[in-house]
Amino acid sequence: MGHEKIIVVWRASQAILNSVFDLPPDRKIISIPPKEEENADKSKITERSKMTIFDGEIVIIFDDNKVSVRQYGDRQRDDRAVVYYLIYKTFLNYNCLLPKKESTEFTPEVNTVSFKLHRYITKHVEENSKSISYIDTEPCEIVLNKKDITDYLMVIDETIFNAICYYLLGCDTQRYFLIEFYKCLEVIKSHFGNETKMIDALKPHGFLRQVYKEAKKLANDRVRPLSIARHAPLKGTPVQSIDTKWLFSDPAGRKAFETGEKACRNIIDSYLQFCTAGNS
Image (cartoon, rainbow, N blue to C red; front, top):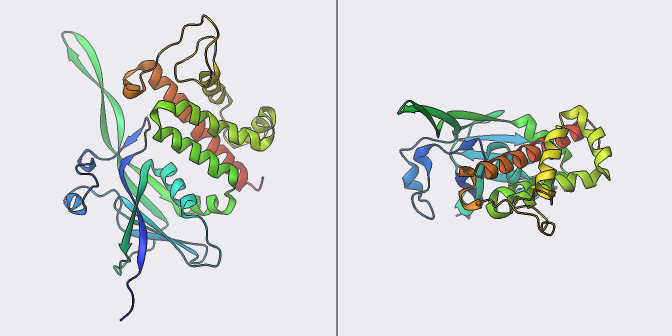
């Protein structure tokens, strides 16, 4: 009688902190850790499927809110390099490591995977002749392409791995998000040696210079500093307090997060396009 194969499964019980997407309302955490039976009658995040990459060296299996990475080649990559990229692309916080028996269930091969999420929208109601706005969600999909994962794995280097790590760390440490977001920008700038060289290299690949500069100013401004900025204020300079516990309820806090988030995602995407175009 053979031994049962045990694999590691990454499970997402929530989305990363972001300004755009969330899990469907019926997929919120009920118990900690969440139990499998709680999801039986709820909307599925993905259908069960797999992507085979590099002629079978890597197989990524998707199943609802879970993902596992199987490697068969002589070259063993760090699973985190794959999973962190999936988190980045899908906004799902795959952070639970679970040992599980390998399934013998048939798994169809696909080139794209659709993630059924919800998107934040602003709605308005009339009350006492005044328009009141509030945040709601609506169903949406994120489509993950096999080509994107393959391109990423072909060009991944220390720079892009660290940039994604800093971005995700900012999403995971709400109190210090702006500091971590700045590190994401800084590690890519350091790759090129200075800011001018970075801008020249990334501009043809969709780099948004103004967004980058806005995020950098928010993180470093000592004249009109935020309480979440990187530096202590100049003597006698008032500090604008940001309540990170209720970040998106604070207009200044929301703006700071959205600016930093946009700058990080733009510079990561631009650097990946730069690399896949044959640069380094």
